Image (cartoon, rainbow, N blue to C red; front, side, top):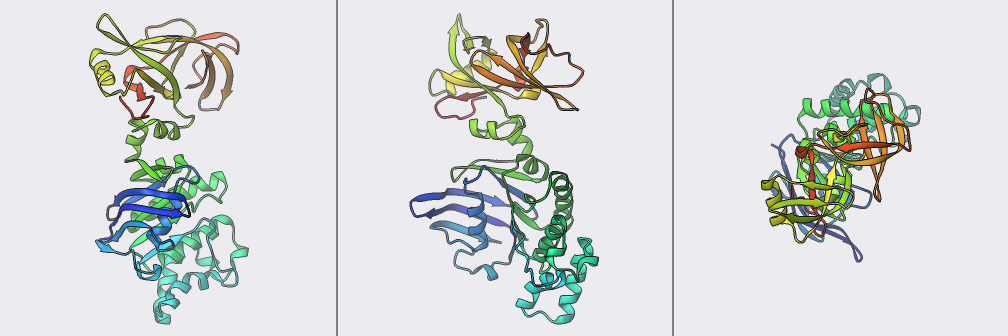
Length: 365
């Protein structure tokens, strides 16, 4: 069993709080991803778990053992860095064997383990080469192999795919996910790429400004974002947001955005009214959930001007100007879109509507 538990972790650099009291757990064999923009504290969190940074507060447990005071070599974790950090003067074999030599494994055992890992990662033919003779994808496999060769309890990865080109990155994320599944290694992975996180993770911890804002399965982070930041960070193109006010008319609860009014079902309206800190809210709806039509239909809510049309092959991204807002919609290529400058009706299903508190940014529905 290999579990990780982080409790109230704080890390400061001078007066800057890089990690601000975060807590999370990782189950045995789980693949979790720390996701967020640059500077949100995800890499610092990973380095604290590895023992490369010393926390100012909080506890880190690996298999229920407090490891705060243990040096990195005694934590039984292996880290894969963004730069791969291969030794340029060593062959691939030498790089793979190095962690075992440092732990004084017998030569026969070292050779056996290196050959097993090389076969697993399909790099047997590269063992005599130096890192400079390898492609980016091959270097990445060697870095993974060096982390695997001593069978660590926990795999820590800091953006290991970011140096690869787009096509290879998509291929390698599938390979890496399959490898992790097959080996069952508990893995904590850092990335700023939300597509990578959605495709690979069992659970995602969305971070910003040193805090974890949501820790859930990928579908929950996408379908039920906990707050405005998560809603805007997950999704491509990102969620559309429109400011609105809560208005009551004849026992009806209406969201008034100025250029349109949207009546909520009574039960949902009562939830919004009760949970909101005031009368101001933010309406959110995803581009792929928008319904565009040339004529007004049952689902139509407001009109917008077609601003730009971006054909993407499998779909079309339509930029719309509505009031003061520039909105994005995603439609299949079969939908007839008026040319730029003309108007189109816009709707979205009630079950896809998100409402956030304008002050606290917390999700209300």
